[in-house]
Image 1 (spheres, each protein chain N blue to C red):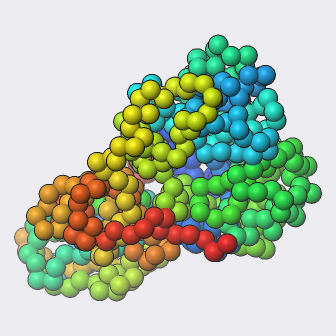
Image 2 (cartoon, each protein chain N blue to C red):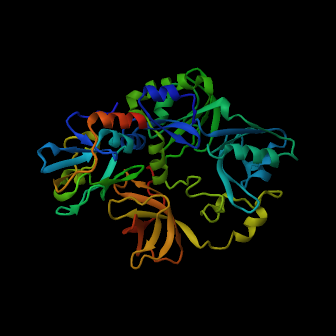
Image 3 (cartoon, helix red, strand yellow):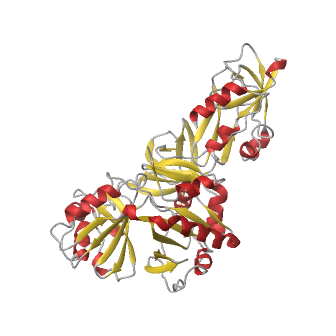
Length: 129
Length: 364
């Protein structure tokens, strides 16, 4: 069973969002469920540093052996950090999706899109598996 | 609802990710597909290929029937040997690519792809009708387990008294492996040495467990369809549905050598294939290697780097473990400049280099 940390928030696109409670800067990654579905991640293209993104936009991509998926912005704002470590070593998304495998940070501007609680995301993924 | 193979429970107990493939529930991967790929290149991998079809053609005129039905010359095949061949439609289009084993003078086993074998069985039955031969689809009776990789012979030799060193590439013989009567074939789809074991379906689980145990000291790992696909791609082997289709002739695919015009008698597809045998096709199956890290995939357009003019289409593509960068096979216009190609990867032109096929060749 995929692990889904309680303290994070989630999107229907299988991303996690951390730090929304402080209301300023959030960290974004893909969930363990997504990483397992992709298989070995071989390439990550995060959004550009400094880019201004809108919630719901496709801002990057993740490629695995068998498939490619978009990375979406779960919230709007400015991209204030991207994780060079996952660009250099994409397997971090498989080995530590909620930790060293984070992808980018956004300084939040305006309301986030509809985010899911851990409980809601658990329900979503158990419906899909 | 996908059909499970006789090994489904084994796959589930190993925690495999299962996927539908051609109507079958197959293991996609057990853990990391890269690790499975590398195990096959460096040690050995264990594959469930029970979705493949086994069609037997037997009788005094079995060889003649196959020589009429297929493009190859199976009558020339010695008992105990196997051949890669194809079945074509009247118009020369490829219906499937096959491996045919001549098990005895009057007994042939035709191994067809999962997606095609019901069609192949129907076509063979129809085409063999005038001959003194019987066509029987025995796919349900067999499971197929492959051991592939440089340690395959070491692993198998611990379980059988069969003369494995004497078994040549593309040969098959009946043998006993861990007490199970199987057909041992030295064939595969990975670019490595290896064996394919055709075993009665009910004995598949026991044979898998025996192989798994015998292989452990050698680094054998179960490997899924994902690794199988990247292994065969590196080895430049065609996949039906990608490099081979109903719309292409064997000559279009650069595999005209499998068509034997000099065999006795007529064969299905001859009239259409004879005129095109010496005509250079407009597009050639070409090996591509990406210079960046984005992966060219099935169906993406091959374009000119300069202005985006479409000059071909990717048939298979994947990140390559052995080359360390993405690779692809594509049909590319023979007139296109080899040093100016790109693949349109979701709207962006990514430069690719033309490289010789196969991408990977094992050291013999």
